[in-house]
Image (cartoon, rainbow, N blue to C red; front, side, top):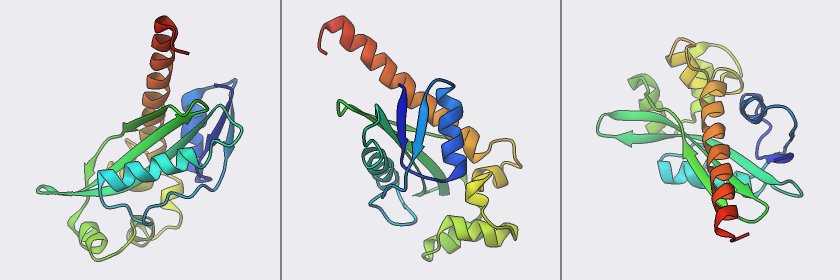
Length: 175
């Protein structure tokens, strides 16, 4: 992959993609529409946002990558979730998810009341731009896992699936 469209200009996400793909590829960040609510509230909605961002960022690139963060309500509480999608120039689509952590009741309550995690985290930490740096996962893991690190993992899962599929397509003669 030489040219990759990235469906965001968020520094944490762009940096994660650059680090995951390594040198030799050019990343083109674009403001791509997710087509979902500002605060995705399920795996399905978060996946749809990632796929839409990937599709809306590919342009003339070899592939587009979309990353989306959301929350999932479970019987154990409200969990942070993160999903990524890669769509290549042939229209092949790959999806992968990241780690999950339970959000504190105070944050969960405000999210269920219609809040958005980014602004809530800024208010909670009394700092601006948490979503562009360590993210909620970084705050609630005491910096041991940052948003960038979590998304690096997701991007590697996407690229690995894409490479595996490409090799197997070659072996089957289906290209």
